[in-house]
Image 1 (spheres, rainbow, N blue to C red):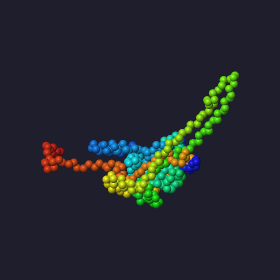
Image 2: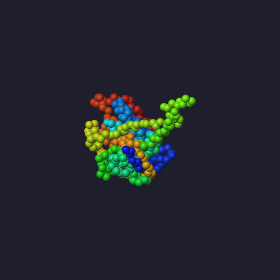
Image 3: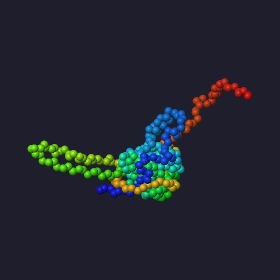
Image 4: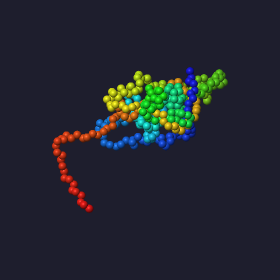
Length: 329
């Protein structure tokens, strides 16, 4: 049975120009924010392994990144125990940037903390979302309030998260983007005229060869989407278990997404018919504060140099010739 067309939203600025983010949303290279300091061999190895498990984007059909709008920095994506994590700064505004990597339109159904970012419903795949043109990029800055406004996404305490305030705190701490490809009707095959019967006075034609100008339709089978499995227990309980297994410091209050101030963000309405009823790709990003990610073992603990031990603490310190006093002027 063919899926029904889904009403969706398209960014109003997605016309003929190449997709560009406003200047205050351009990310800076992350290495500019890394301080230079001496580290031990063990710390250097830990940093190398940590960098190998860090990326900037998630997704195959579309790239999904989280942008800290206050610092202009793309949050690195950290892989840990089969999940992707980003560390949010409490109080900072953020955006979910979706970049369509295909040469065709896609529908991005976006959910934050288990809530559809457009309609406010408890999120499901068949709901509305944003339609992105071929190779287009769009920054989703907040909860959709109208065709012209959103309420900004902000990293906030669990008690102030929009999901908590609306009685749905079970899935706080996760961002999901379900990507759907568009149904494209294949052109009807050209009917081949029957070949004329062979006669002694004429050369016989080959009945197996197609008539000039005819074409055969190509058939393709879409790959099965990689869908996330449902794990038992709440996300918070699993995170607490991971923190205990890692033997780390105790976690602070969990981070959620708040309902920030109103901002201008215009969209237009369009129709979109999905190629299939299930997503072609589901991109999942977990998030929490840096402190909590360190407690869970997602991020390495910061290196704090301590006092250097003295192998002969009771022996006198060897002295050398001191400098003479400065001459008076």
